[in-house]
Length: 324
Image 1: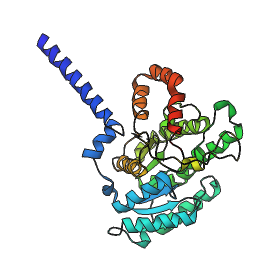
Image 2 (image 1 turned 180 degrees about the vertical axis):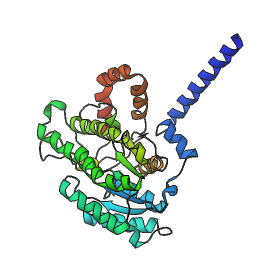
Image 3 (image 1 turned 180 degrees about the horizontal axis):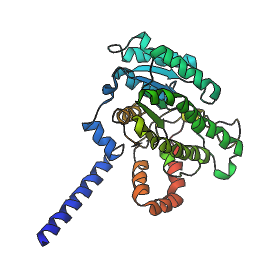
Image 4 (image 1 turned 90 degrees about the vertical axis):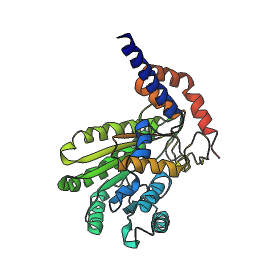
């Protein structure tokens, strides 16, 4: 009996050590890292019709490149048609062995023009006859001290980051329900899981996304429709060029640069595509320290709240030092 408990203790300690070592060298949660090595790759999505919002730059743009390489038929949406056309041409170049001109469709869309969402869905269906995957990536950042944020900024962020994806999803779902198949992806954030300081409106909107779409997931099982919440941490992107502050109409106008705390945009997009291919419920995509904070928050929430209260501002300040 003593030998049994000794062996069990060694096994538990060994498993814990393996987990910690894996976590140390990871830029995503353990299940996601396992799927990158042994699960389905993005090329398993070949032939699927994938609609990507916010596809003109940043994570959405690079998701488009990854899926073009995989052989997906793409619908690219954002407000800036000129930028979408550039993304389309690069998609055709990257995916030249798998897709043609007719497989990439540019559809300008303002995510807060709610009355245009239903006609946009009909346009996509007229083009491809189906929508297999909807990637709700369109969104906006915001940075300001909590007390400096005006309520109108909260309202604007909520419409862009929450009600926009909710509205578009609601228009796409009848088609997926009728087919008894589909996949809804929402690009949330690490800020949707914890409460980093100085991101009041952004953090609040990302938390709201989890509430809306986790509720949806639990209603869709009978239709074989999955919902994936992707939670990227700091990524090299231009999000701060258009991020709001706490004042209406005021923009941060700064560019994130590469650092050891920021993930390359292409790597982030690839990991999101792996999460899509494997139909994961949720995917954490980040370098440290954000990734380890997510794990601490999951298993030691009170400790994490204390750490964020004491050191959260220092972490945010360090991240902000990598702005042009």
